[in-house]
Length: 238
Image (cartoon, rainbow, N blue to C red; front, side):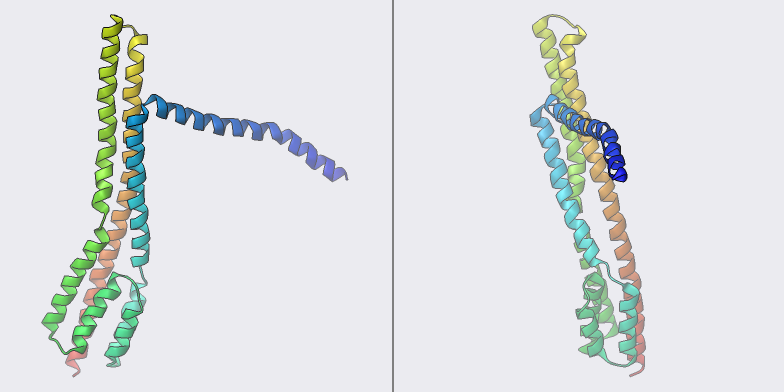
């Protein structure tokens, strides 16, 4: 019973702290909402749309690239073992059951090997499908760069409009006092900051995606070389 009252006392002592944290959270959102409105709902909405659309492409690319990643060493080893056992059908079955661009390249090469095509034709197929898979990996990245460039541009456009508004207020008031200029200047600064923040967020994700693409392309090149070596050994043993 004594422990129960001690626990209640501790909760009662912590209650003001929790209440203060809740107030800070609410106030933060209120401040953010106020800044959004002060920046001009029109231009700030465009900046927000740029962020939402940019992040949509980011999420799509992250999912696609994560699905494109496989255990390359295991795949190459399994295919090499099958070819060493002179079982092209087994190698094809392995690649067809494996997802990702590397497995797709392997499948095209093994189909041509099974059909009895020359090493030159197989090499061309590997190169062609490698280039095609690289294009698939880089798909939609250009849209992200578009929103990276568009977000600060929209912010600067809001800046220009805010400055025009400030000068209009000066003309109407016939005075250059800080109070007259402050409204337009505030709009100009908030839209600029909003555009730059959105561009920075998207730029971080863009660089992350580029690093993933480069890693997968590097694995594709290494795996293709290993596959070609295994096919050459398979052809020599005939």
